[in-house]
Length: 123
Image (cartoon, rainbow, N blue to C red):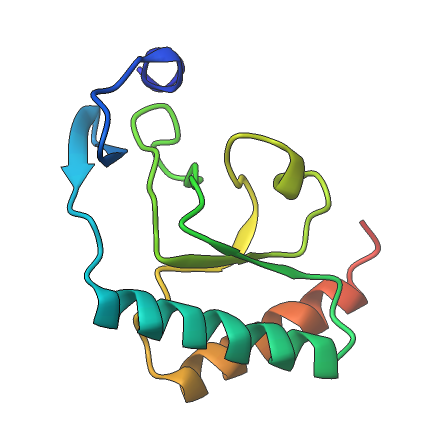
């Protein structure tokens, strides 16, 4: 299902997600939503820079989740990846954060934990 979705020539004007095997059109964002998304991206990006983290903030990326990866392709507002291979493809496979709908304090705490685990990991 996922391979077919990625090859699919979807109708223009919308972003599409694959949710449990079903293509779902996303509504276009309204200006206040875009402003919040931009501010969150800037704040998270600055947070990563201050910690010298090897991570990247990506807006509206495609994300292939670990669970039911063959049936889902999600498009969150923001994602953070610390994998250099993630930023070169069609989708993120190893995001450390996505769907940034939590308060900024919780987002920053989760990022700090993910960065610490990445720095401790000899991968």
